[in-house]
Image (cartoon, rainbow, N blue to C red; front, side, top):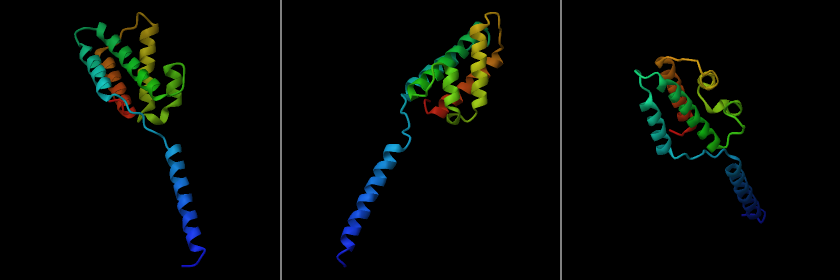
Length: 139
């Protein structure tokens, strides 16, 4: 071996270590949720939705929206409101437009006291929230 080969190999090794450390430090770290807790909360929301009780329709949508918002906050997604967080997180969801529709339904329910929705609308919104929570890794 030549006298320059050993320092060259050491330099390559040092550069490789620096590259490895840089990759580790800059890679996105996936947030670890307490999946069992989120699953239990979402299951409770689903179980409280009663076809024969229209009063449960609004509660189910609002509570599912709150649960998704909590997961987004826990992940550290920027924004003061759920809407702002959704603007910062479109790549986190398989269907961001569906999540927006469900959130707009929630807003309408919260701000229009005379608004009535059907069981089908509430159940559809819950499916959207469930997929969104899956997309985040919360359930």
